[in-house]
Amino acid sequence: MGEFKDNVEELAASLAGATMNAVENLLQLKEYRKEPIKARDLVTLKKELVEKDCNDLVEFIQSERTLDNVHAQSGLKTRLREDMAMWRKGDTRAMPMGYLLCGPVGTGKTYLVECLAGEAGVPVVKIKNFRDKWIGSTEGNLETIFRLLQGLGRCFVFIDEADQALGKRDAGGSDGGLSGRVYSMFAKEMSNPANRGRIIWILASSRPDLIEVDLKRPGRVDVKIPIFPTVSSQESFHLITSLCKRMDIEFEENDFDLLRTHIPDLLTPGAAEAIAIKVYRQTVTRDLSPRDALQDILVDYQHPVAKEIMDFQIGLAVKETTDMEFVPDRFRESG
Image 1 (cartoon, rainbow, N blue to C red):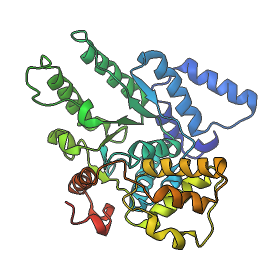
Image 2 (cartoon, rainbow, N blue to C red):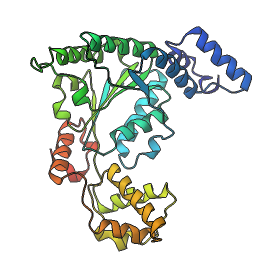
Image 3 (cartoon, rainbow, N blue to C red):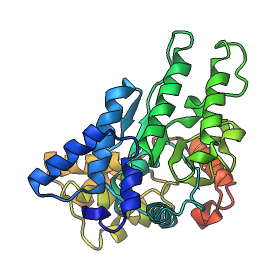
């Protein structure tokens, strides 16, 4: 039984929704290859079954990354790993119904979900564009998605740009009441107590203030986690150099001291990745050392997001958090 040798209940939960024929095929394949069954095998099995029936309404997030690839956010990683440990043991009493990831644009909310997907051992499903121009089709698509999620058994459900996707309680008459119906369907599904320990919702937004308050309340979203840019030049340097290392660009030990005055703070992973790519390009095309390339790039560096927008979105993330331990000291006055 591989990873499930001492936990038959977990194996049973992971197989919920799978057909007998699909399970038999998996067992025969593993027997032929003389391989044990692993959690990832069951995720793949569920993925194939759902993708066959979902008509492109959802997609599975697959990733080789794990939470080890998340820089900083140690409190968040600890919390997620504790939750997953309880989940594997079948102890669902303290499991959240959902998470809200909020923070400025580019801070890595989707990246965090990818890392979770690589570590969780359960399907991570992203809801795609379910809206349709035909009357009744949008609601029908949502019903199909919810039915498929129930068939998966244990899974994470990821909704990016949740402020736009989840609808509004009262959006006026501009869409014929569609937004209100979408809101009601999500509100009902997210608060279903039978889903605790089976379906965990992960919402992501840089504008959590635009998500209906009822959708963010405990019982639907129990844990609201802010994700921030770097809080110091040293943290920014570590982020940049870590991304450069993936492209085989290495810095010297004293490079930070020589570059300190040029390195910006409030750097998002997205902005840091753009800088790392430029460093790589200049080391290749101009034969510069990594330090000289980075210095050249940062001399006239300008943040891709205006400071007032960054500060505003940081403030929103601080206000939303359910636990101030997730908030660095620097930002605790932002809310």
